[in-house]
Picture 1 (cartoon, rainbow, N blue to C red):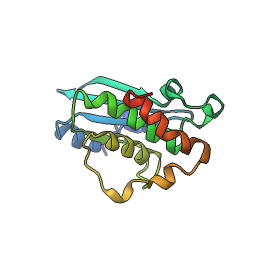
Picture 2: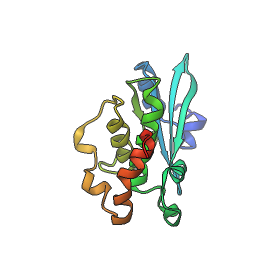
Picture 3: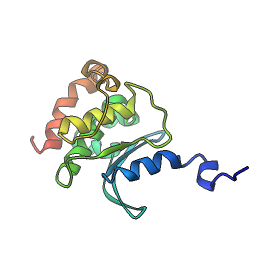
Length: 161
């Protein structure tokens, strides 16, 4: 019987999925959920050495007009969409094609992970995906107060007023 690697025993790394992502030789867009925020990074690999190029998290949305009283909702569907849009702006200068890396998160269609993906796709970064897994605009704008602010925050992220 083979001994499992340490990071697999700790439920931190799926080595089979990691090797498949590394073989694609494209930069990876890594997204992680915490109890409070959505974290994302653009990572490129060279000889299995990862290099973080760009990062964004949902806490940065406070600088673009996210309401202070809704700070506890920085892990919601609209926040993850806008975080993806923010990373899309940062990434679009360096690369146009990437691969999504969700790590050990469960593959749940129309979830926060795929809301993030929809945001980065809306900015123009090309990531292979199935259109059925993305949430609709109605689902993202479900919360009435934040749903009204999405367009204004998107304009501020693009550089408008």
